[in-house]
Amino acid sequence: MNITEAIESALKAVVDCHPKRCLKDVAVEEAESDEDEGCWSVTVGYDMSVPSISRKSSFTGVSVFPEKYVRKYKVFEIDSKDGKIISMRSKK
Image 1 (cartoon, one colour):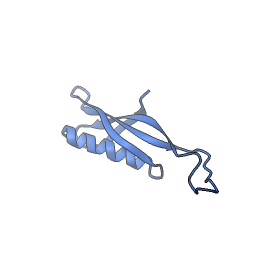
Image 2 (image 1 turned 45 degrees about the vertical axis):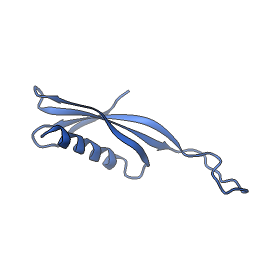
Image 3 (image 1 turned 135 degrees about the vertical axis):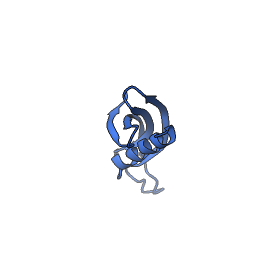
Image 4 (image 1 turned 90 degrees about the vertical axis):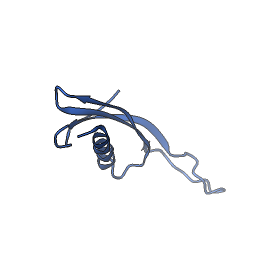
């Protein structure tokens, strides 16, 4: 498995883990091969929408409280041989 395939696996996993959430600005932050462990470590960052109270103005019809986003980071360990996700954890 090369770096491009490892990154594709991590990006697919992020989308699969949040099927109903709105994600923005999904980006690979880091990708590193660990030959001793036989895996790739890929960090993916993304902005995820968070629930907020939303009211529409009766005058303009525009939301008074726009949707909010927070930046999240996930680190994926991916098996170098078969490309399967070994683990996923939040990065602080």
